[in-house]
Every structure is written in C-alpha cells, then in structure tokens.
Length: 268
Image (cartoon, rainbow, N blue to C red):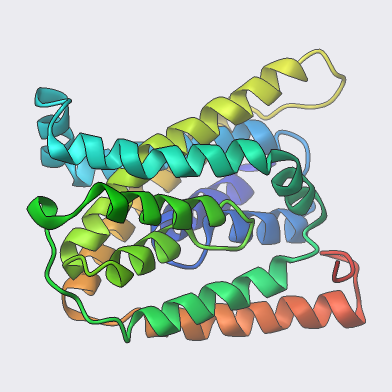
C-alpha cells in the first residue's frame, strides 16, 4: 500500500463510517480495485480507531458526561444497544467473515441499505429524546447495528433508521447512533486485533508506518466532518440522496458480479 492509496482509503473510511453508505462495503470495493491484500487488516484496525477519535471529538460533551456519570441513563442505553450487536457478532462470526472474504453479496447489501434509507425518511419523529427513550428502543437500534455488520450494509444508516422507527428525535437519533458506534468500533478493533496477533507468525507483508499514519489522519479528519454533517443533515434534511447513491453503486456491483465476476466474484 502506497501513501496515495492509504490517503484515499483513509478518507473513504472516515466519510463512509458516518455517512449512511457503508464504510466496510466501500473499503472492500476500493481494496479490490487497488488490488490491496497485504497489510489490509492492520490498516483497517488503524483507520477504525481514527474514526473513533473523530466521533469522540465531535461529541466530546456527551463522552465527558458519560465518564462523569457511568451509570446514568445515556451510558445504560448505549450498553442496552451494544448487547444485541455483540450477540449477533458472535453468533454469526463465521458467516460475516465468509461474506467479507468473498464479497458475493456486496451488490445486494448496497441495495438493501438504499431501501432502508429510502423508507426511513417516511418515518415521522415522535420527538423522543434521552428522557423518553427506553431500553427496548436502544436494544432494537442495537439489533439494527448487528445486521449492519454485513459488509455493505451501513451501520450509521441502519441505526439511524432504527432510531427513527422507534420515534426518536432526528438530531438525538444521529447523536445516539454515533455514540453507539464507539463500543462497536472499539469492539471490531479488538476482534480484528486478536486475529492479527493470532496470525502474526504467518508469513506475509505488513504495512509501512508512513502510509498507516497518513491513512489514520485522513480517516480522523474526514470522519470528524462527516459526523458534524450528518447531525446537521438529520436535524433539517433527508437521507434519500444517499439511497440513490447506494442504489446505483449496488446495481453496478451486481452487474459486475453477474456478467464479469472478476472483482467481487459471482453472486452467491
């Protein structure tokens, strides 16, 4: 991986982690296009941690309040939302790994994300903020996050859609989605880190420090602006524009899978 590739991948990770268009799906796409395999796991862990810093920088007041009151309602809601995600991640770990490795369902998952974004815009907010949000609400949002472990299903898209489905205020839905991403991103980094340590004795290349650093900075900066943008967008605007994008992207991937099959393999 060279510096240019690291920069592009870092920007893509930072933007797509929080824009509802699937970061993992885009990383799989771009890595296949660039032909990157060596060092990809190390790089993936690094840029995920960089996006973790980005969301904490934007929502630092919420993070500080959570640290001050670890048994307050907001941290307990985050725990209630994280538990279903963990259960799904552990129960379907082998399936998720297989789908990431093959990319065979990438096109369908992008289209699924588009449908969720399209229909989520028709959901009317009931104005539920922190005080009115229940632990059942958080658990359902966590279930949506668990489904979003699939390679091209957007985590932010599904969790925001789940929050809107449960009647959360649009701005609070975005904030809660991004706060819920903190344990999810950290957990993914720990899982991947375990795999990296387990396979560290295996022969193969790594990644140089400079591309790694460039990718992390690019992911952190782009992620910071993506979080700010999405919170403002959810307050006033629509997510439908993102559904058009992932519909087109999914159709292109499906076309490649059905008629060519070189980059992403055949469908299923």
